[in-house]
Image 1: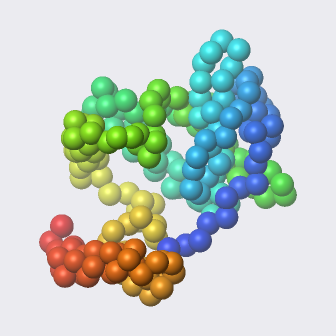
Image 2 (image 1 turned 30 degrees about the vertical axis):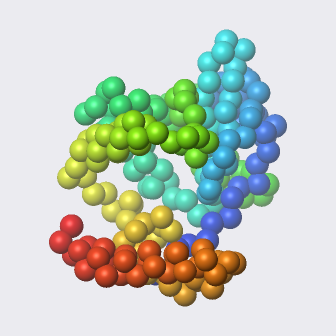
Length: 204
């Protein structure tokens, strides 16, 4: 049964675009200009080399474990193997052959990796969001879930604030919503979650 433990608070790595360019060159042999991308926990950068090749350099926070990143890469590999047309990026190998390396940045050790670039636009930036677009997204999520069916690695089970199975922690933070209208909306949705979703978790 999922718990309602509050999520871990992560400190994002202190990495700028210049440092990202240096990391890409030093570990992956990619010489190019770095542009920071939006992210929540890591620092992600688009690296574009002189030949037009593009990769995403990921500098993980110090709280992230090697086991978790290896699990993420394994998930990508499983999806690509079972559904090659899903458009899943592939990790790039560093000069030593590994896909995850360590580097000391601003006095702290961080894990660094690089993934192939996938063309497109983030859903958060898509306006308007059409029914066709949302249906396509649902189909893709279904394909990903099917490709990962039956796979449940231990490293993937960790506190994560987007995990609906642990959403109970939200209750004590409703007061952080500044307007009464929005607060009431979230309260109603959270009540539905408690009444309908929580009792069903054990059967999933």
